[in-house]
Image (cartoon, rainbow, N blue to C red; front, side):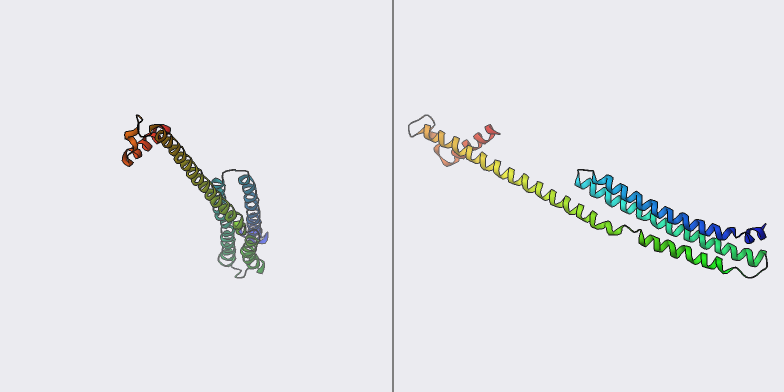
Length: 197
């Protein structure tokens, strides 16, 4: 049975199959990342968009690394298994150079494909999204502060107008004449503000 496995080079084909499976897995993750970026591009909330892109990228980077290291490890194990079968069980002592070539080629090709399909350069998209979020947040805060300052100025102007009207109607002999002291005028302004609020 072991002679047939070695004669048919099943372990060699298994190493090639594992390498091909790793390349297909890397390509699938790359495609999945592109689709998630497009799907996240449809979101309107910038914070949610940025956080989803960051979490998506980190999750898929870990998966991509697994598709490199696990097939490489399995390929190395198959190379070791072929060497053990050849030396210990079949007593041939030598192993075809194809096994060593395949054992070295699979990890190297997976690393090259990993670098080729790498999407970390897409960090610019994520950083631009984060910058947009920060700038938009700053604009919203500035607008809120400007609106609050404008409403405070309008409220002060309205209080001044009402207080001025009361002063005019009070005159020196009017029924509000006793409210013209500075402390009581401030109390009047507070009452007016509370009434307006």
